[in-house]
Amino acid sequence: MLATRALRLIGKRAISTSVCARGGHGVAKVEDYTLPVYLDRQDVPLPEISYVQKLSPEQKSLKEKEKGAWAALSLDEKLALYRISFEKSYAEMNQGSDEWKSVIGGVFIFIGLTGLIVLWQRKYVYGPVPHTFDDEYKQKELQRMLDMRMNPVQGISADWDYENKQWKK
Amino acid sequence: MAQYTQLGLQDAASPLMEELLHFHDHALMIITLISAFVLYIILTMVTAKTTDKYILDSQEVEIIWTVLPAIILVLIALPSLRILYLLDEINDPHLTIKAMGHQWYWSYEYTDYEDLGFDSYMVPTQDLTPGQFRLLEADHRMVIPVESPIRVLVSAEDVLHSWAVPSLGVKMDAVPGRLNQVAFVASRPGVFFGQCSEICGANHSFMPIVVEAVPLEHFENWSSLMLEDA
Image (cartoon, rainbow over all chains, first blue to last red; front, top):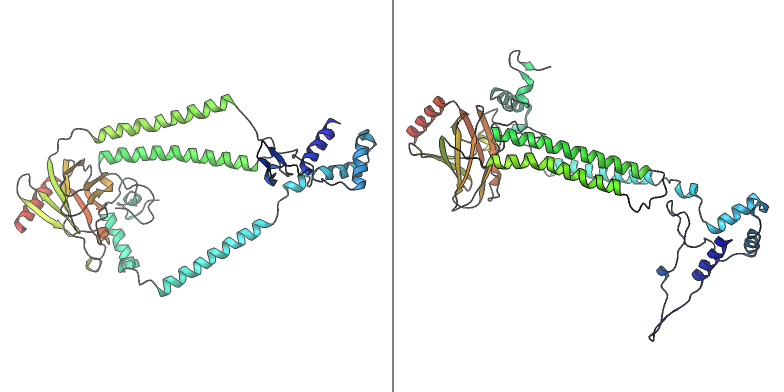
């Protein structure tokens, strides 16, 4: 009872386009963003105003019936009352959508485009890599690193078995 | 030297670098744990089914998340300050070398006993012998005796450079008109590479530093040979 009365008061405030009288200076327009809004949020169970502000005649009579004993209401009437106060149920509010598929698709499209650009660059823009990248040269470099005992503690020379001339198992 | 796709630090070749390496491991472990914990909290919050999220105060958790970070910071600060003071320990170097930065090469002067000086230019890529490391090799290396405290006085002849050898844990800016001092001990023999670490013009990436730590007799032979060549 108290709830419906309170709701009606808040509802009345929301509907009215009352102007704000400023002391001596005239009136200021009430901005939309300062008025209470309806909001479906998981962590705000009771929004500031009811969803349906302008009640149809059936809804008005239903509201009158609500003032009586609630046991007298049928399931459909209870649901109708729920839908007056709220737009979505919790289940509807929390349901996901298929948007993520579009997002992932878009991401892959752009990654693919970038890949195409990179391949084109490698073919038509960049010159050849230095000769030090040849496999044969790399082998000689590796041999030299091992011969010089580079990083012998935990690095490359630590993994080489010098006795048996092979990588450590 | 660093290898391709290497993420961590190079193996230490001096005691100070060892300390820095261990401290780096310690600090990195702490921040990895913190990041994993925060990620877990974020995931839990995002997937939670609770709707009551307006918690206004909680003394216990506030105390915990003030005290615990303070403790963690102390645990990071203590080793860090220890190393900071270790770096400033009094040295008694056996050898003093002057490393002068030029555009775009280094020159080393060993003037303790004789007048030995030479330039150290990068070996160009087309002149590499097979197996040499591109952009790292130099024609003359700075040879030092192993396990001897060395003092390097770093300066520059033209613009700012920086003399850096990561495996020795050494980096010192070369400022024209200024002498900066850095000291280290090479704990093991080997060849240690570094690169100029202060932008100095077109060939800033092409003036490497190569330090070779050898037993004392080899060092003496080398310096005699270099003096003869000069």
